[in-house]
Image 1 (cartoon, one colour):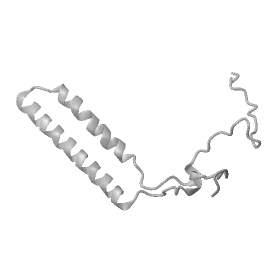
Image 2 (cartoon, rainbow, N blue to C red):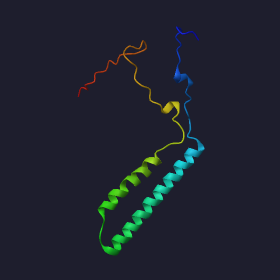
Image 3 (cartoon, one colour):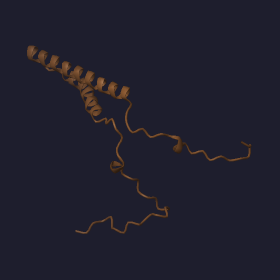
Image 4 (cartoon, rainbow, N blue to C red):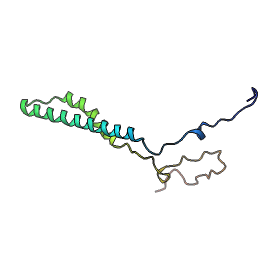
Length: 111
């Protein structure tokens, strides 16, 4: 390549879009989810047994436990496979795009 020559390199063309989480990662996510859920369940059961025995409730413990249960719920939302084309929502066209069709509907609805 010459020093004065400009080369257009498109990194987007070189990137491969994954369609599924690798097996090892997926199994690790499942293992982590199960371990966190089991820990949170056992901790809650222990706290409830202590409450029944002593008659006292430790609110701070539940504040500490809440992020763990929220994390488990968020991990449950992880999907192994990428969305299909039908599930992908396209970005709106830019105003300068030659294929852009202006939206003639009024943003204010008449009642």
